[in-house]
Image (cartoon, rainbow, N blue to C red; front, side, top):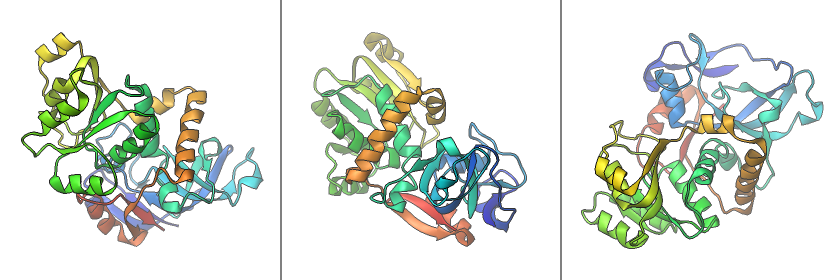
Length: 326
């Protein structure tokens, strides 16, 4: 089969190559999936660079961690009636290939009402977003401030929060991103390039301040977020687009008794109670099937265009995740 393979760690566009490799065979309890679409996530790029929490064995590592496809073979102990099912799965390895292996228990069959583009990215980012929302203190009627609102998780969060009656202040770093989100019908979008953005945000959240803030940017913006939090508020660090350490005021943290903590979706998912996981996934699938949750792609590339695909994934202003199609 064909697959996007890297033999060393480095910049994805430099080290990934499309190569022929053995088609995998499912072991007991596993299924083999024929890939339809697989998104390129930021954590996939970090993995290829060798600076993520998971490091694949080299040489011969196949990229990708989420995909939609059809089951074409099953291992011992797996119901053969699963063959032919269209499923989505995340938290796996090697999806940038014509075929990949997943645990039979981890795949999620999809109704026909959910298109491939949405199904291919239904779990990793949406599940991270809904898991994050679930763990936040904010409840119906409260305010959350999120940075990187024009990113995949940011856009998903606007849908999930609205469905739960939670208010959002959506921060972006470019005026063009304000227009993009506003055109999508998203409210309370502010650009941090506007000198008055903080005053506008404060007017939205009111004197009591926001209950929760989600930061995916890093740097000086973290101090602004804590200024906008109310007493006993929380700042949750989801990512770091700038790679810059958080700038925080000890006085603000102390006087408001603010909690600062990180969120790693993979760890949260591993530790999650199965009943809660089922409830959250059901909520996601329901929103997707209803058409309330929609996700676009940022372009679809063949496996033989892997370099172009990696460069596209690193280009700002995409409408959605760049996809690979075998």
